[in-house]
Length: 321
Image 1 (cartoon, rainbow, N blue to C red):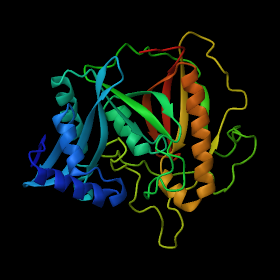
Image 2: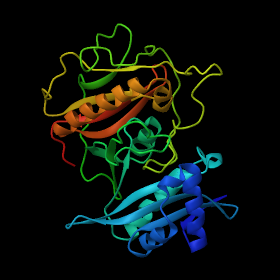
Image 3: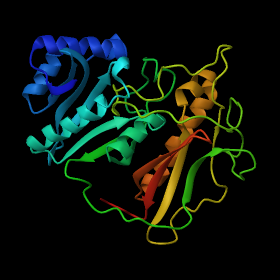
């Protein structure tokens, strides 16, 4: 049985330190003294216990911008043996209850837009929104998942009593900001040529499982486990970023759908072809910044297992929730 509760002692916080180091690396550990301060000054440290042992945690800080206070969810992790068992979701749902009890209206965190498991968890499972892109937000990081690429992030907004406004549902042809390049699809690379690197075009794959927690410090669903066959070749075809040659810069109607596609298995792609991974990073950065400049709000995410891609879905037309 899994029990979710607030950390009760320095011993608990020391166990959370251990879990951080084991899940990610010692270089990103938040020390127990700082977590204690967070818990005592409007934040929270939640832990998941299995048979009395801590197997997951979720750390949040009190945040203030001079006008409003909210809860910043900084880090979360779940032991590999307990992932995909609902522990991450239970931690986040309890975090939302704590935020409500403390009087916060919203919980925020960042996540890598190229981690499909985290996108699915944050947007689909939790119902968070995204409308802010943060280029290279944490600088160049040295942990295995981030090493070698800019730390671009989306800002997740999780309103404790639901979204801060109604999101209109619209039909019609979507605005294509970025798509995965496939055979004979009429799409071109963002700069007019194929990006550096290469690799096969998408023809199949399998969906990545949702990650157990979405913020940086969580364990993405398409992270470190397996990704290459016995001969070192990637187990899923590599795909390239592409755009529509004449994508409109503004919706023709008041409300339109838009989308950005990403690879489902980005960490595997990165391990196989770093130039192609960088091309995806650059292409998604340009696409998200363009979409958000039009007032777009990310309100959905779909995974296409057959094509090996995930699709961010936007509402366009100046939606300010």
